[in-house]
Image (cartoon, rainbow over the protein chains, first blue to last red):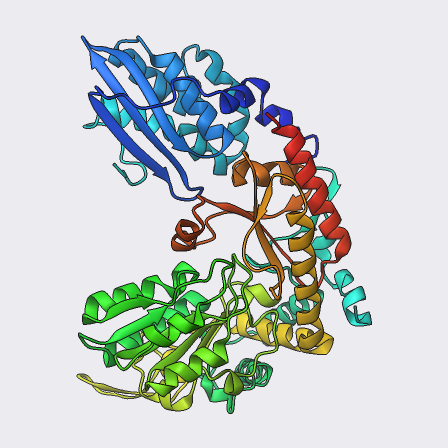
Length: 152
Length: 407
C-alpha cells in the first residue's frame, strides 16, 4: 500500500452516512424470496427480503450486522434496485461486482461508485459484495454462483 | 523491565518499518510473532552452509543437517522441560499436532459412551478435531462452562469430568479472553478419573515458562511461529507412554522400520510421526527461537507480557464506549475489545491507517463469540518487543476511530 493512503478514500462520507442511517432496513412479511448470507472471515451477516411483483423488485429490505462497508453497500444496493425489473436489478449487482474487481462495469452505478476505494483492499471486497450476492441468490437462485454458506 | 527486554526490539528488523508513513506498532503477536535476526540468521546459515536431507545420506552435509535438526529437538525439549528429546514430535503447528492426537490416539482409544471434555473458549483447532472424534467413535463432547468474567467454572468442571471422561482438551491461555487456565488443577481432575489431558499451548508456550511435567499434561501442542520461530513448524509433545500407544498419521518415508511388499513396521517415536522430509529449516529456526527466548528469560517475558495485558485492559476499560472482555487480572498479554457502534473490521482499518496492526474478527473462536454475544472483536496482543508507548498508540488509535465514526 502506498504511503499516501487516505482513509477518506475508503470511507467516503456517503458510506459513513449509509452506515449511520441505513435505508430499507427491516423485514418484509410478504417477501417472495429471503436469503441469508454470512461472510465467515468477518462475521458479517445479512438477511435480504425481496418482494417481486409483475417482474419487478416491488420492495426490498435488509437486516444484519457487519462492518460499515457491508452495511452501507447493502443500504445503497436496496435503494438502487427498488422498482427495477428483475433483469435490471441482477445486471446492476453483477456490474457492481465487476466494478470492485477493477473491471469496467459497463454502466453507471450511481452512489455505489463511492465504494470504489474497497477495490484496493481484497480482504474487504467480500464485505462490499455480500448484499449483492444475496440479491443474486434471491432473484436468480439457479444461475447465481454459490458464495458463502446460506444461513436461512 | 529487564535490560534484555528493553533492548530486544532492535533484534527485530521488521519493527523498523513504516506503514502508511507512520512507525509500525505491531500488536498482533497472538496471530503470529515477529522474528529476530538470530532466527533469520540460523535459517540462512543452514541453507547456505549445511542444507541436506536428514537421517538419510552418508555425507558431511547430511550429517550436519541431521545434527542441527536433532539439536533443535533437544533445545525444544529443554525449553519445555521434557524428560527426553524423543518426546518432542515436530509437526506443522498446533493444529496438526492436535489433529494427530485426535486421529492417532483418541480415535483408537475412544468408544461409544465415552466422553471428551473441553471448554467454550477453545480455538477451533482445539474443538473441531474433538467434534470429529466424537462423531466417528460415538463419544460425547461436553463443556466446562465459563464464569461471567471468562474464567473456567472449576466447580462445574468437577461435575463434568467424571467416570466416562477419557480425554480433557483445554487451552492454557485463551487467545481472546486472556484467561490463564489452571491447567495443573484440571489435569489432576482428569487423571483422577483416568482421562488423558491434552493442552493447547499455542498461546502459552510463547509467553509462559513451560514445565510439561509440573503441568500434568499428557500431550501439549504449540506452534513455532508465535514464539519468534518460522511458520510451518510446531510441536506435539507427549509422554513417551502415550506416544508409543498412538498410531502414526502420515505413512511413508522415514517413519518405518522394516517394509516388505505387503506389510511394514513403524520406526520408534518420534520418527514414527515424522513421515516425509520434515521442515528441517523450520525446526532449526525454532531451536534458535527458543534459545533466544531463554537467553532473555521466560519468567521476565511472562511478567512483561502480563503487565502490558493488564495495563491495556485497565486503560481501555476507562475509555467511554469501549468494551473489554475477559478477566481484568490476572490475565495474559492481550486484550480483546469493541468500540460501541463500530464494527471491528472498521476499527482495524482505521488502526492500520495509523500504523497500528491489530486483529479483528472471530479469532477462530465462534462458540466463544456466541458466548460473548458479539459477532466479532478487535484484539491487541503484546510480546517481548512491545512496551507502554505501544499502549499509548493503541489508545490514540481508539480515540481516532471514535472521532471518525462518531454518530
